[in-house]
Amino acid sequence: MKLFTFFIIFLIGCSSTSINFLDFQPSGKTEFDTTVEDFKSRVGYLASDKLGGRSAGSKGDILARDYMVDLFKKYSSDVAIQEFEVITNRRTKETAITYNVIGVLPGNDPFLKEEFVIIGGHYDTTPNPPKARRLFFDNINNGADDNASGTAMVLELFEKYATTKSHKRSLIFILFGGEELGLLGSKFYAENPTVDLNKVQLMVNLDMIGRLDEDKNLYLGGVPTAYGLDKEIKPYIEKSSLNVTSYQHTASGVRSLFSRSDHYNFYRKEVPSLFFFTGIHKDYHTPRDEANLVNYEGLKLISDLAEEVIDNAANKEQRFEFRALPKIEEESEKTPARMKVSLGIMPDYAHQGSGLKIDSVIDKRPAKNAGMKDGDIVLKIQDVVIDDIYKYMEILSKIEPGAKVQATILRKNEELNIDVQF
Image (cartoon, rainbow, N blue to C red; front, side, top):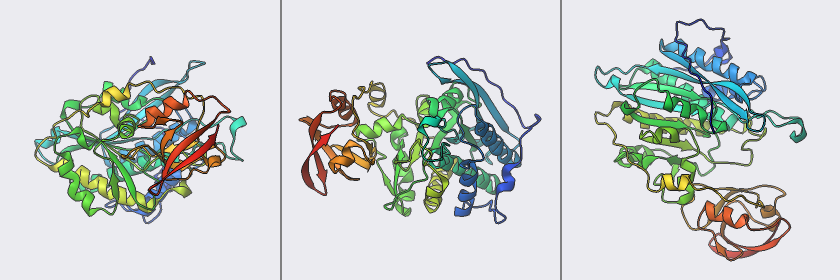
């Protein structure tokens, strides 16, 4: 997709018409630490109906931009906005202006401050559904998990590092616009960087980290993108109460997932990149993704782990050496088959065993009607073995609407054959 873009940077000295939404913070606001209350406040504002969603070119896009700029300017004299044009409707060729918001905290080491660690996440949401698709009385995609959760963590970590000044390398905090339109904000930044990307030690991406489950499963992608990074972060993972999964990229679905968020545009520039993610759920890209469903205690746990990883990258003397992920380019360029029918499930992309694991079953859809449950693993559909997400999509591209087929699933170590009516 070809985009006509332009690039404008507003430095701190430029005039601003933004409203100071920092007044929305509670009186007990902390600066030296991230807290559950802080996350509730930030997600609560960003995902409030007041913004009306944060899709590119919307009122909420502007309000979120100003909110982020105000915080960055409170602590840094090096604040910038990248402004660029995106296509918001491919059919009508409608366009809008959206933004990357950037705040820089210089490092405290005379030599290492010339190198960088980037901490980022997208702040935009998908557009609100048209009136014909309203869910009850709510037609606002507030995007609490996707991605007010990651945006809030970027802001909280910025505030903490701005007050502690505990980093040798310079830290660059970026909130990307246009992610939901195809990772456009991070793509724009990677093509128009404000620093030399060859001097970036690590990029840390925080996207959809607000739904930590009861087992505390956290997907951490990108660990193999730097030699020895797994050993560097292992002590922090072992100390954490989080169940950090799938960071070795040994499954096709995991490798496919790695290409679906903003860190991937940095990875393509050979920057070691990490991706923190708690999984897709039934409320994904719907108006049901509200602030009251966010696991704020989980956000605090993830923030603590992310902070230790960032500390390590910002303060270790040695540079990480980039390493390409095996087959990531090959698999990301596969064209998935166009499915004629839908099973009605959310796949568990972190699953590394055989088959396609179901993260959640959607109500009133074929899988639910057939008796499938969350956690089931689809091994076969008809006689086709489901090796990965691509094989799953391929078989569904060959099944006609109205057909009845047999699926083999694994449930608690027992194989079951289930008839599925599409």
